[in-house]
Structure formats: structure tokens, C-alpha cells
Amino acid sequence: MKEIRMVDLATQYQHIKEEIDTAIQEVIESTAFINGPAVKRFKENLQKHLNVKHVIPCANGTDALQLAMMALDLQPGDEVITATFTYVATAEVIALLKLTPILVDVEEDSFLIDPEKIEKAITPRTKAIVPVHLFGQCADMERIMDIARRHNLSVIEDTAQAINADYTFSDGRVMKAGTIGHIGCTSFFPSKNLGCYGDGGAMFTNDDALAEKLRMIANHGQSVQYYHDIIGVNSRLDTIQAAILDVKLRRLDDYTRARQKAAAYYDRAFADHPLIKTPFRVANSTHVFHQYTLTLHPKVDRDALKKYLAEHQIPAMIYYPVPLHQQKAYRSDRYKDGDFPVAERLCKSVISLPMHTELTTEQQDHIITHIFNFLKQYNP
Ligand SMILES: *Cc1c(COP(=O)(O)O)cnc(C)c1O
Image (cartoon, rainbow, N blue to C red):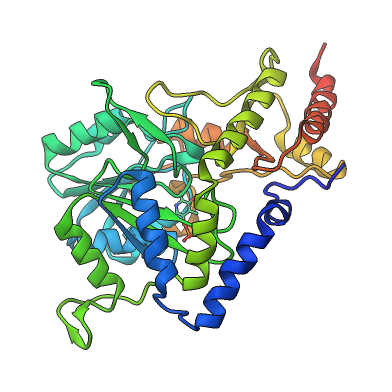
């Protein structure tokens, strides 16, 4: 059996090696390393795939979030609401721009930001909401967009983990994750569902004026070279990375199905186990399984399980061990321990299993068997 990895980019590459190598070689020979034709090609293909008017490539997912907040003209002291159970990037850029991160709890089943908690956290200083489509399915965008409309707020979707997920509105309309809010932000970090071989990111919007502003901010605040109308940054997607992404975008639907198939296989195996809760599926979104995350019964020693799996050459990860409100850098007088009981509980009980496009049932059987073996000690 092949070595089990959390994400197996090596095997994936072997399957697409010829196309990838040719694409990279073309860029090198053209020497169009910055804003070469592959960037435009990939951008246009992604626009088509997501059915969104504008894709603005940038250097990474964290930049995408920062540029989005800059384009929305958020001012120091403005409050931005996001979930406390997530990756740090969202709160990081809010804080860097001297905005105030307002953290709220997530829903127990879905791990996603709780719209009711959003509504309660709104004050006259609130300017934006950043729902994170954690682990691969969309937050409750219909309700979030409704809250935003009623309170005149902007919505920035963090789609770094959910590219290609479909969200269905109650009227039957289907939209891709990241194309529903005012701006969607994604990352092409190698391990993401659409990942390059280095850093990369993009912003999505259907708003022409916002798109123009995002493009300017990503390019030193200029639309005409050497005429700087607003303060910007330098944030570009490398041509080589765009060429790689264009090859992988053609397979994104297949890759998504491979992840969903692997998830269904895990689901069946764990379905009736009293100590394991398999990932919940929300009603309005497909799940693209950036992560396959189990919730363990509180009596299970999760860290011992992780160690046991590692001893059997099975990697597993804790996403995330500490909620943002308990992180040293983001501690605030606003919050105390116990304020977000769901997130605090999840941080102690979740474990993510290997999940990628190349996972075999033989590997999954091996993982499943060892989890069952470890859990036997808890049976009376
Ligand atoms: C990966 C990730 C990011 C940041 O992306 P980078 O490209 O690493 O900067 C932001 N938000 C979430 C939820 C992520 O998973």
C-alpha cells in the first residue's frame, strides 16, 4: 500500500505530469513570468467555471481577504463579524487593517458561522460579515445575505476551503461558493481543493466597480502605469502558478467527485459508531470536503488517537486546536473563556482524516480499521 498522506500531491502530479510539465515549460520559454497570457486564460476559465463576472487573481488567500476589505473602504474601528472557529487569516487581516474583529460562535453540527449569533453581534459600527465556508460547505448564505441587506453590511465570503461547492437558494437558484457575497476570496495554496505549486489566490465579484477597484489595489493602486490613484499593494498570481491551475481547473469537477466519494466511504464505515459523529451535511450546500472532520465523543482521548494513528503511519490533523478568541494574539476584553461554548467544545473533539483526490479504498480501510481498533478500549 502506498504511504498515506493528509494530501497526496505527489501521486496527483504523476497523473497529470505531462500536461503540467508542458504548461510550466511554456511559461519558462516565453519568459512571461509576470502577468503572462496564462494568467488571463486561467482567470477567464475560472470565471466561466464559477459563473461569475470577475475573477481577480492575487498572491494568496490572505491577501485576497485584505484586498477585499480595502476595496470596501472599511475604516479603522469598523467592526467586522467572523467566526471564532476558523483559520487565523480572516481575523488577521481585520486586525492588520485596524478594523475590529467581532467573533461569533459556530453551529455544532455544521461547524459553520451561526447566523443568529451574527445578528446579535451587529452594532452601529458593524460594516461587514466574513462567513468562512469551513471544511468545504457553504455557510447559510441566504440568511447571511438577508441580514446584510437589512443592516446595510458588506459580505466577504472566505471560500478558501470550498471552491466549487454549490449553494442552492430557496427559490431554486444555484450559485458557486464565493460568488454570492459582494466579494469572494479564495486561496490556491497547494493543499486546497484547487491548489497550485506555491502560493496563489483570487477574488470574485459580480460588481464591475468593485472589480476595477480590486484590480487597482492589487496593482499598487494604479490602473494606468505610474499613476497611483489609491493606496494599493503588490499582489499577483505568478504566471507559472496560473498555468498549473489552468491544467487542474479542467479536472476540478472530477477532483471534487473523488473527494465526495472518499467521504461517502468513510461515512458508511463510521455510520453507527457510538463514539464518532461523521460530518454533517447542510441542506443548501454541496460539500466539497476540503477536510473530512469527525467529532469524537468527549470520553475519547483524541490526542492519544492521533498518536496511535501516527504510530501506524496514518496522519491526522486537528483543525483547529484553539478558537480565535483564545489565541494569544486575538485575546480581547470583549471575550472570556466559555463565551463560545460550541467552538471551544469542537476544538477539543474534532479530528480530520486524510482526504484528497488520490485516496484508495485500501488506504481508507487501513485508516478505518485502526480507528476502530483504538476505540475498542472504550467499550464496556
Ligand atoms: C488557506 C486559508 C486562507 C489563507 O490562504 P493563504 O493562501 O494561505 O493565504 C484563508 N482562509 C481560510 C479559511 C483558509 O483555509
